[in-house]
Length: 67
Image (cartoon, rainbow, N blue to C red; front, side, top):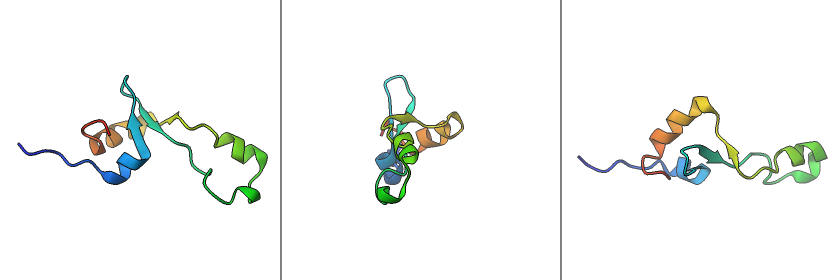
């Protein structure tokens, strides 16, 4: 059987932890920060958030070798 291909878009956005959780970075922290409120900026500050349980199975299929 041949090798499975890793989805490159998913590889850039997600990673797997040692326990098997899917790690991601929160959105809305890249640009246009002058127009956002302090609350919006603070809520997006978490770098290591975890993906939702409903999406986890799909993401793991896209990253067959752990990303």
